[in-house]
Length: 383
Image 1 (cartoon, rainbow, N blue to C red):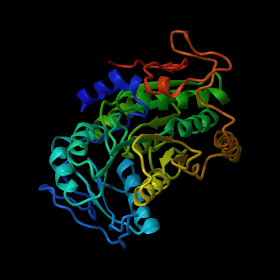
Image 2: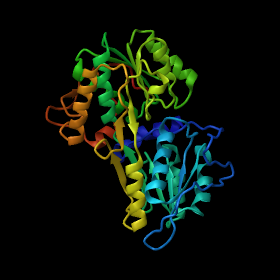
Image 3: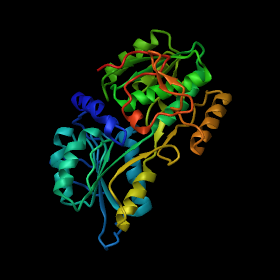
Image 4: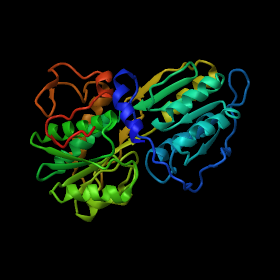
């Protein structure tokens, strides 16, 4: 996994979509999800829908880890279920498919399904190989950068939501000391942390964000240790780029505001929950599969944000002051209207080098290659 993540950093400047988190290999299967170590499939309930040519469309989704109750896979699967409801297509889900086993799984699925969604970066080469071998099957890959006539890629502008989380953090903080536990130092995570810091600084210019890296996607013990290391320094708001609620719960134990990731996680720390960015993949899934049904789909790169309804923030916690909620909502309206760009200059990095001048904004290519922190962040980007 770490080798794959290093690859992202090296090639991301020439890609057109955001590299997103993959999953740690896991051998357990989430309850209610279809899974098979032999590559078997199980169709979920749904009324099949026909393509323009009269063929009943069958769609498969593949996850690297259990679907769970919150997080990246959970939100992907919510989109899958919405796809069934809105378009009536037949879908199935396989979770716990290790990256090392993905090639065989995609090969098996391509014999039975018309559309296959792969949901982690580490599936890229396996999906590319399967797509080359099965040109009549449509493949959609989350967060990758390789495309073919029958292989498209998709990702989201989560940094927009993370700016709003940072605003809320900066407003509720009493000492201006914020903490952020990162997963791996890849452009997606770096841009999210930078956006969080910029949001906090927009309401509290003296706010500082201390960053530590867990170098994990899912490891509660390591992540708890990383959280405690920041909490011990006196941060009074703690955010994280992790699906598990471990870090959010650690902050609650200390009576510190906390933020989760991907899903509304307020239930894990109701009294100290701030908010966090969330996903809604339904618009993209429905639009894409409908285009495939109608025969108008073309492979390419999709990079949706708040305007497209793909990213958002969870409702702010019950104890968050009303003035904070009002300020965040006002800025959200600006993002939706296209009148505010999170990475519009002037922006300087930690060394004081100007990265975006006044009146200019970072391009998608620059965001997708981001390997630097903004001023006000304490921490290093590890190679």
